[in-house]
Length: 123
Image (tube, rainbow, N blue to C red; front, side, top):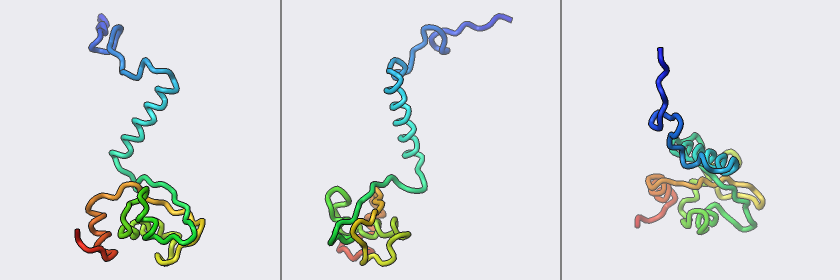
């Protein structure tokens, strides 16, 4: 039985190559890694993407939450508390050099609910 010939549409000789196929190995590896990260974000995960914040003297969960590079909203401190409950027994007491994990993305419904929980007036 004759074997079918593979042309461009079937992935044979002369087939169009993926745009990243011409890239160098390191660039291609990074492109693949970024694609995998994007897929993981779309698929969701048990723990959201986070960054670490090292508590400075005088900081509170509210002051951390209010920082422009965190949430720019002091009423979102319960998000930080809930995410770090394993190391924060009392949300009014945190310690210098304590390392807190701060969720990067907080959806609008969670923001609304959390602000109400923390006593913010409705805007």
